[in-house]
Length: 177
Image: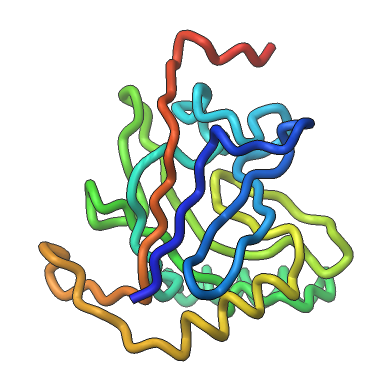
């Protein structure tokens, strides 16, 4: 089982990058959250902000309904994305065993592990997003080469590994205007 760690206290000077350490694979630059909420755990109780600190199981990405599957495929084709949604992973909270969690009374969810687009465009709506698609492919190949494990207490949930997201949010200090 792969173990990775992301620590919000290990930010780049501009705050736009945080390190994702995946033991035995490598260390990768990632971001989490959109716009002014990027990598700000103090704001993780806001929709599309940084992924809340906690433990997340790396699982196959939920595909959703047939309509959602077609929608994802159309988005990939319309934008000529080289990184397709079908290659992404889901991140399920160890607290809830789903891809949703309540943070300070706010429901957050649909957490994913994915890359930015090959041209560097794209967003992270609270996902863990790798800056380089080549880094994502290295991580993806390594994860897929491993045998999935049964998640303890996960009612049959199978995971490639887990990511421990570290940080101590103080929601009163979400200083984003």
